[in-house]
Image (cartoon, rainbow, N blue to C red; front, side):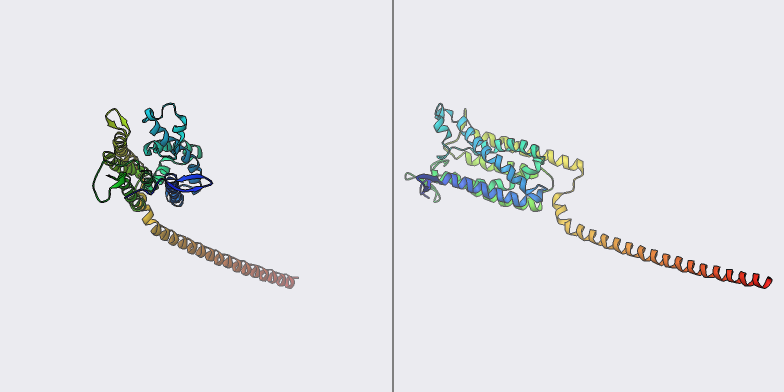
Length: 318
């Protein structure tokens, strides 16, 4: 496959790059999905919009800073080149790291649960990655070693492993899996973000081994190192969050969702029974009141008859 070029179109003499369009489009779609699914995680949808305002600059700054720091020899002293993100050079891990750091403080400020928020956005992050990775295809970057496979990416007549495609497919499948898991299997807070860290790290570790433009720390590929650390942290968080949920006696979230209609029916039945009981009580009170009134009227009549009898007797005595 051949890239048609990095420029999507021109407007007012300015080149609009595929790289930016795809990353922006993926981010927008992920935001919409998180907004619509927020109530499922007991999060106000409007908070997602507040969060995104901070996440956009955090993602860009984090991704660029990470890339530049580990490629400093290519950017040292050239600030114009450092700030030129339109031509590529954004590292996913850097963007994610800064987004989670900033997101923690944003959640604290708005008094929203950080773990629940992380669970929510973890579902749609892979979709944004799956779309954004195609920017590497148009820029003819982040490819793998040479290959003669039928699906090779052709650059200057030479075939390379399309590592962007491998990651895009994996992330797209991961998105659908997390979406299904969140709806049917999620059982405790923190499970989704932990699962994302584990499964994305597995793919990134192996695909990174094919790339020819990896960032290095000595003789270690940085993305593989970070991926391995995220994998271990993801497993540890899964265990920690699960233990916390067990100690609290939290019922599985998925079970609560499944039993919701039954609970609603039971509640409705209980309400109907309460209404009937109240109606019976009201009828009994009315009957009791009527009986008291009748008894009172009979008593008054008997009293009057007695008085009349006394008057007659007194008249005869006179």
